[in-house]
Length: 364
Ligand code: 9MR
Image 1 (cartoon, protein in one colour):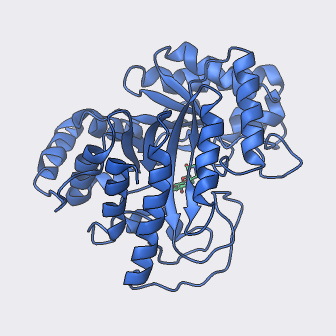
Image 2 (image 1 turned 45 degrees about the horizontal axis):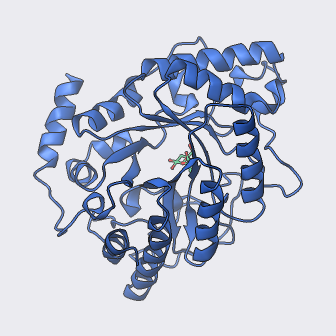
């Protein structure tokens, strides 16, 4: 039944073709996959599903594959939601990027902590990590082409290398390499990547380079690094993004921009530290004015121009398709109307779409 529903949805999708002369994926160089995060709620909207099927040639489930949604306390794996996204991607012949296997934020702490929140013994935590990764990667073997194995392990604190997470506290710093080894053993054909925010910026860039060098020195099976790309209108500077990509590409790994969005609203911090909350103005509740649309378009054009210059960048993913579904409507300021993506709440392309298409086609 579900497969027929997905097929019907995809076929219906073809009826709603956006009025764009060229799509994002058509404009991109062949070496660069163009994607977005997608969730099962969005796929219930045939017009949005149409745009997704038309504009991109790869996808990332926004949260359906996160540990919190994948397994319950009795080790019952719950694949139904993830399977719906996988079915849509397969129907539309779009490679899928699994997001993610290990994260400190939306996770199952019992994998690494006892009922009092204390770290489990290392051996038990390692067994749980292995069992979890085998269960998820094994289920999707051959159907998910890449895995965000460890997400946001680098600390935001200047004097701290790795973030103290439940996995890190129970297993130690080598939880990262173990996770990559378990993922590779579960699907030797999957591309494995480390994913994080603000790693194009001084501080986290150096720490990420240190992590990558350490993993490569131990022959850990890591293929790529994901720069999330949660940017502001004026931060980080485009040349910093450019230099960050260059430095990460120099490690020999593929580079991917995994979660690009540009926040046009006033806020203090870039990135995605979910521990941050800010009070802030909600200046555009009824839509982004024309001058702000132009600023957003220009910024997207500059960022994508910097990205497309680097042949080592193999995937550019947007963190959503339309403004109404962006996580930035609630971060870092709760409940405000944001406009960070390429399509508006009416699913119409914004000026930023043309700027991105031009940057993808011409590199300027
Ligand atoms: O966009 C995601 C939002 O819907 C979720 O509620 C949130 C927590 O699960 O995660 C958001 O996406 C994050 C991604 O998984 C990892 N990088 C940072 C993203 C924004 O927090």
